Image (tube, rainbow, N blue to C red; front, side, top):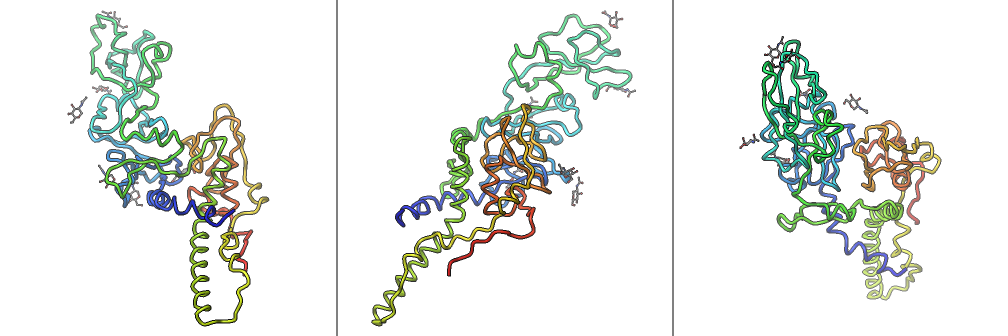
Length: 378
Ligand SMILES: *[C@@H]1O[C@H](CO)[C@@H](O)[C@H](O)[C@H]1NC(C)=O
Ligand SMILES: *[C@@H]1O[C@H](CO)[C@@H](O)[C@H](O)[C@H]1NC(C)=O
Ligand SMILES: *[C@@H]1O[C@H](CO)[C@@H](O)[C@H](O)[C@H]1NC(C)=O
Ligand SMILES: *[C@@H]1O[C@H](CO)[C@@H](O)[C@H](O)[C@H]1NC(C)=O
Ligand SMILES: *[C@@H]1O[C@H](CO)[C@@H](O)[C@H](O)[C@H]1NC(C)=O
Ligand SMILES: *[C@@H]1O[C@H](CO)[C@@H](O)[C@H](O)[C@H]1NC(C)=O
């Protein structure tokens, strides 16, 4: 392989890598909902790392918080799907119907995928009929509150009942789907989506989306921590190789220049000194210093094969692997880092741990010292 082929990628990518490194992924404490563009933790130093309206905050108990400008109170984030641009939030007090009564998401970038009109009723007795949805957290011993899809409302109402309000409720599915299960619709999470910024193009190519800091307001795709399931291994390897080989290549270039310069000085002075192997100095390999874990240590970390539910143990509840950003599928093998319990696809994290000793999410070091060191050839 020629020296130009080895170095070529570093002449192409520095801008992209520098830009994507500027904007960091964030997490709220031990919670693993990935916060990245268009979302941003409030207080981030780089305003261009988030899109207006996508501010999130963290609670002291590691919950990720979303607020709507015209609704009082906070919602906790259950999950964010960056590919489909969907966010799922829930009420910290576990009474979503109460929040729906005063919900106003206008002024936020979020929109419901589907909505259904519900009528909230208050009656002095427990409503029997199956179409009434009893709402325990709004009811007390003297007034029972229920909600019913406005279209299914029977007229006339029992005279002792009265309509509290009618609200348009964001729901997960179209009309036909609720027939059997609309009872659950009001207690399940609020599912919202966003159209702007549209990062689906970048995400579907397993790239990251962001503002170009050098090009006011323009969105563009970063080549980043991407990969599809099939190419994951080589991609992860490439990313990791780039991280290490990048600085090594720069070092190699500087060394090569030094050698050239010294050679010229030497020639000028007619020095008789012969240099045996300048080529070895140019090759980037000898400069690579890897400090990773050895195979037996990596193997000693807990592995789990995901079941049909695809439920991931530990605090990783956003359903995707931090390294390759692809979702977990059933029967995939994932590996947990001891102590912090962050988990990743086994083949992603193994590659990482061969050259790093820390968890890529929280930078916790599960092992006190590097075990395997390849040092610079003298
Ligand atoms: C959102 O966060 C950014 C970065 O910290 C900040 O500059 C901006 O003022 C925040 N916006 C709101 C509405 O809080
Ligand atoms: C969160 O922690 C900070 C600092 O430790 C404290 O000042 C604040 O009152 C806490 N907030 C809550 C809601 O517990
Ligand atoms: C995360 O941290 C909070 C307190 O900060 C703790 O209550 C909770 O149990 C922790 N969760 C996990 C999965 O470690
Ligand atoms: C939401 O709040 C805004 C600002 O107060 C108001 O203009 C709008 O009418 C409200 N929408 C609903 C559905 O209440
Ligand atoms: C029950 O709730 C209704 C309406 O929210 C309220 O007017 C009433 O005082 C409550 N009764 C009791 C016993 O808490
Ligand atoms: C209203 O409901 C109560 C309790 O189920 C019932 O006794 C009463 O007859 C109903 N009134 C009408 C007008 O349907």
